[in-house]
Length: 188
Image (cartoon, rainbow, N blue to C red; front, side, top):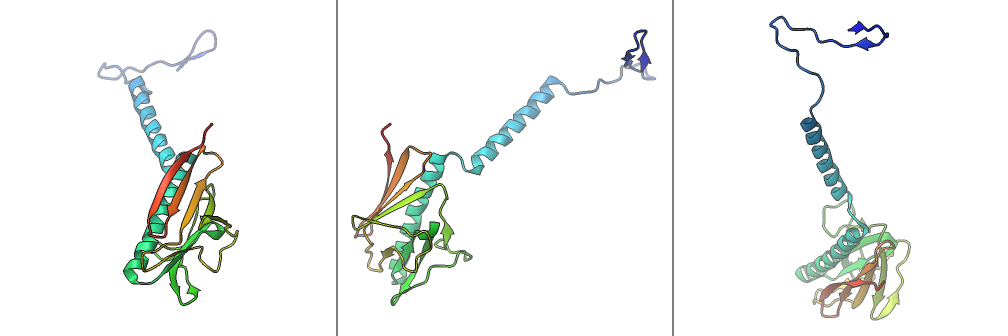
């Protein structure tokens, strides 16, 4: 380093003993572009894994509810014991019905029908036998729906919606045990 006549500090390269030029310090444009591309790819992956859009979360909740109901009904038929399902208190709870008693499966168990929270951004509206069935804000001591060992199911219609999504999903269950899921796009 040396100081110029104006008082500014100037950097000079010290020649190497073999007469070759010393390598320049810093990054090339190519290196910077590669780093930016890697960071962009990582951010995209993180964004997709966090949960995606509200519409995707709602669809995942609807498809998950359909799969859980189907599993509860299948298990009732295979085990020969009726299964109850409840959706109150922001929880999905399922378990065997035994002589006027219902014991939902523990949330700590590894069972796919274990008690678990329903996504807080998803609103549920249940109709049973064609009439509105209010879901309590706390967990109910009795199930709202029953899958019978005979293959029958409490007829119901479960609407899943989210305030930030224009579409809603309807899960229908009929007496014969058939479950159907449909997307309803709101006119707008």
